[in-house]
Amino acid sequence: MIVLDLHCPKAHRFEGWFASAAAFEDQLARGLLSCPTCGATEIRRLPSAPYVQTGHTAVPAPPAAVPAVSELKPAPVEALARLVGQLRSMARGAEDVGERLPEEARRIHYGETEARDIRGAASRDEVEALLDEGILVLPVPPGEGELH
Image (cartoon, rainbow, N blue to C red; front, side, top):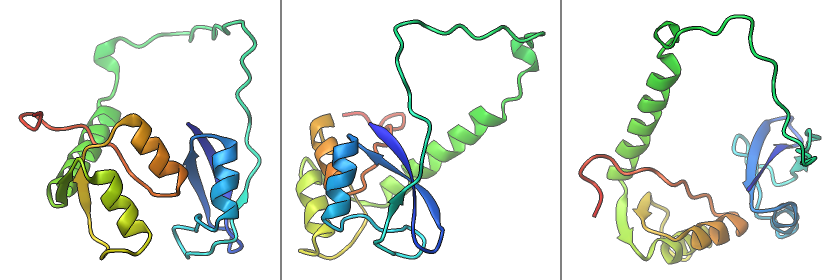
């Protein structure tokens, strides 16, 4: 997966997640990308710093003082817990299509059936194929007691 910084003609900035740069170019050429704010389809990629693997692992300099675990603020953990809770709540309110998730997501994306919130199961390869097609899917970890 790669994350690209994108923008539209109205200067709305947003991120796009793609399996590869080629997947981005393919989706752009097929008109599958649009600005989440205004819906514009003229999307441009902003320059971003590439990750270059050099074969050497850079070791960051240690901070002057490392705080004790008890001194760390729990806010990021609490924020993440709230976010996961909200995602689970949204998933519970969505129609469970089970193993038909990839097929049903495509039908909704291509206008073959009414748009609605759905949830279900998909393999990693199926999720990547959906993302390559410009179909936004988001894995949500199950809550306690939700594993089958």
